[in-house]
Amino acid sequence: MPGPEYDVIVTIGLDFGSSTTKVCYRIQSPEIDKNGAVRFSGNDATSNGLLLDSVVYIAGDWQYLGHKEFAFSKKVRYLKTDLIARFEESKDIETHKRVCSYFMAYVIGAAKDYVENHEARILNRHQAIWIVNIGVPVDHDGVGLEKIYREMMHVAVLHHREAFRFYLISRERWQGYYESSKDRPLKDMHIHLTPELLAEVTDVFEDHEVDDGLSIIVDVGSATVDIAVVELDRHSSDVQHNVGFIKAKVEALGVDNTVRYIQSKQGTDSDISIKKGLMDQSLFTEIYKMMHDHPYELRGLGGYGNNLVDIFHGVFSELLMEVKKTSSGNQFSAMRSIPLYLLGGGNCYYWYQQWPEAAHRARLSHCNVPKCDHQNLHHHPDIENLEKNMHHRFRVASGLLRMETMLTVTGYPSHFRMDNYPTTKVNLHERLEARMAEKYGR
Image (cartoon, rainbow, N blue to C red; front, side):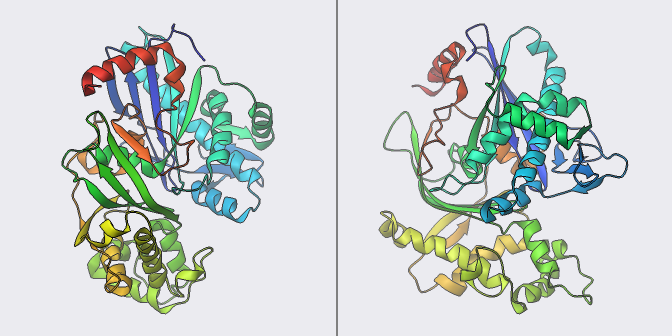
């Protein structure tokens, strides 16, 4: 690990999404604490560069990889969706790991270049240690993709310069980088992995307007939906707030996955946009009919019902019924309603907004399970130049920057702790901790 010659920490919060990737950064020293959002350039960047399409260009039967379009190339989308599916099926994942690591390497290289240029006034006066903290989809009691993500990120960090500098690289060369780098030590940049949902609730539960007790978090992404029942306790300690994950579930029911499921049954006589139908209540009737009237065989979700509506209802209902069997079951059943926080890029879709209530009516109304009470979030990420309409899309990326949180989290795998950040072995971190102790009174 680097020694005390480093006098500033730069943290990159990388939210690798199935549709788009978002990146925030934080610069910390005993005198500095600055947050910002990375802006990307190129045809695959939207919303003034804040959103980067999660795509790689390939050609020659995967013989060449690029982060920009090149001659005879085709665009490969949904990298994360495919990675999760291949992992769960134990199917041909090696090539896809390398493609994802190449994309992550480009993102890291582009983010580092942006921060070094945009924050040159600060960084030119300091020696920085760089930390890349990436969100990982994982439920509360399983390791999930952690090992694969760690391997891919290790290679990406070691070769981010090559991926960013050259828009085209042969698969053979990248594979050589991959195989030769898996066991090489990291030097100037280090990695940390955090469950995506954990990064999101870190920001939510430091909001003093959020009530103590049990609540539900639903994070709607492009590929997956993360659902968790959590308990916030601010009263057991003056110096920390406890957040316990009671039950959590991650399923491949995100917006773009759902669109693809429906497209497989759409037929030729429908001219309605499926995404618009999922988002707009006035267009939803036809989409609901497609979801309800066709059988869907979805890997790992067959036990919840035959049609897509039943599958959605079953996933939500099963999680809440499992909560009743836990030590929090009596408290849960005694509630008249339970606060629900709908987060993620898909939180504006009508289908996902009404899904919890519809699931309750269909499956839970006579099961002594509280109804859901949708909550508004008043606290927004403190990110420089981030427009308000983008806050909900950056909760994971911004949460990945907050490692000195007052929250103590339980219920996740032990290796996903909030206190094992790489800088814990750097002398600078001790000085930062002293400053945070003054700020938080610890």
